[in-house]
Amino acid sequence: MKILSINTSTPSGSVALTREGCIVEEMNLNIERTHSETILPVIDRVLRDGGVGLEEVDGIAVTAGPGSFTGLRVGISIAKGLAWALGKPVVGVSTLHALALNLPFSEGPICPVLDARKGEVYAALFRRDGNGLKRVMDDRVMKPETLIGSLPEEEEIIFLGEGLSLWRERIEEGLKGRAIFAPPYLWVVRASCVGFLALDHLLRGEAEDPKELLPIYLRPSEAELKARGDLP
Image (cartoon, rainbow, N blue to C red):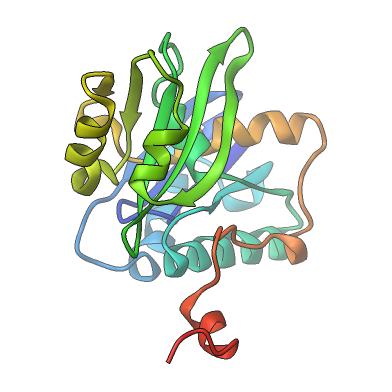
């Protein structure tokens, strides 16, 4: 099964083509341009270099959130448009789950962390089991102190994610030597991991209707808060 996968939920974007759980082609970007400018040309490049026409793709996968509100809208709009136009199944996966998949063989708890702005983080918790990574804590948005208090006690926790560029010291202080930090090259969400997660859903026939695929923000946008009168 050939899957075209897209991540625009984080500052570093990514596009991958996978086949039967193996990477055919992948491009990861960390440049000062918006995803709306870069992702479509990168999709074209990945498919061309992979020797696969867009119509030959069996499914499309995209990070549905959490993450940048604008980035999520870009990626999901592209995925929905392609799935609708081509009549292909589409699957949205958790950004944090895809990020945790960078460490599939870790023995300890894995905590992916993204900056959520407003002094908060997006985070979740996973553990390895016989079938891959098992979710221990749902995707949440919270203060770093709340995250620290939610983690297992007397265990070392492995952290990764672009949110560590802001919150590493706070986490290190709060866990008093129990925090292990993956190297920065493992902090980015790879589209290939998005595709690997989507493969299981597609094989089980769990694709989503493109019309019903929506971003998972975890909290209201500023526009929604203004509409409700919660912001000036």
